[in-house]
Length: 380
Image 1 (cartoon, helix red, strand yellow):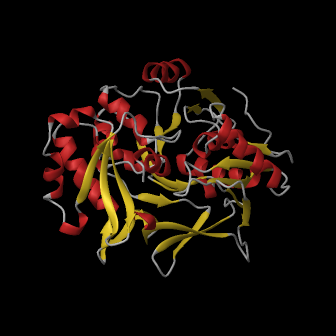
Image 2: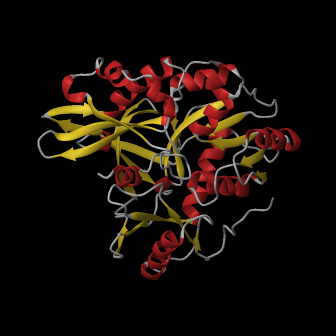
C-alpha cells in the first residue's frame, strides 16, 4: 500500500472516524471553523473525551511525526525489507504513525481495516509482515484464543494503555514478540519502548527512553517532555459549542507536562499511574490503579476477563468521592458476594459503595472506557 499522506506537502489534514455520529461530526465542524490556520498539520482527536464530555483535538506537524518516526525506526532497527501491518485506525496516532515510519524507512504497509484474529494472522503470513502495533485488548484476544505468533514477526509495539505483566508473559509464551511502550498523542506516539534485546527474556521489560525526547519531572512528580515531536497545541470543543485553542508554549524548546506519575532512571521510564487516578477519600490518598488491581485479582480467580470490569469514581460532598464497581459481565449475578470478596482486601475508605451491571461498557476506538458516557449511563 502507498503512503496515505504526502509527508512533504504543506497540506493540512483532519483525521476523521467514518463511524462517528452526526452529533460528533457537528463537533468536528465547530473545531474546523475555529481552528488556527496551520500549514503542514495533522489534526487528531485525543482518545475519548474529558470528564465533562468535551472533545479535544491535537495539532501535530508532519515534521513532528517524522521526528518521532525516525527515532522509532532506529529503536526497532528498521530496514527497507521490513513490512508493517497497520491494524489500528489511521485516525489515531498509533495507526497514522506507522505511515510516517514506513515513509522514512521505505517500507511496504499492509492494512487491516477491522480487528479480526483470523484475518490478522492471514495477512501476516501472506505478506511476511515483520512489524506491527497493537493495543492490550488485541493482545488479550490472541492469548484467549491460544494463537501462536507467525514466524515472520520480529517486533510488536504495544501501546494505547498499560499492558499487564501477566498478559505480557502469557503472550510471550505463545511466541508473540511484544515491546510494551509508553506514549501519547501529543508526542506523535512513543516516548519510551522496550528494547529488541528484551525479547531474549520472558521477564517484563523496562521501557527505554527514545532519543527524540528529553524527560524530567515536575514538582508533583509528573512527567515533562521536551521534543521536536511535540504538538503545536490543542483545540477543545465544549458541550456548549464554545471552542478554545491552547498553543504549546515553545520557549527555547517545546515542553509538555503530562498528568502521569513516572520514575526516570538511567535512560529508562517506569509508569506509575495517572495523577487523575489518585483521589482523596475521607482525607486519605487513594490509588485507583491499586484498587483496580484488587478487582482484577478476584475476578481473574473466578475465570472472568478483568477487561469487563471498571472502577468508577463519583464526587461526593461528604467523602470526597464514592467508588462504584461496574461490569458488563452478567455472570456476576451467580456470585452475589463478590463485592464483599473485593472489599475485604481494601481499606475501609477504599471500599466500593455499589455494584452496577450494564449491557456494554462504553469504549473509545482503542477500547478505553469512556468515563463521562458511563457516568451518564448510570445517572451520575
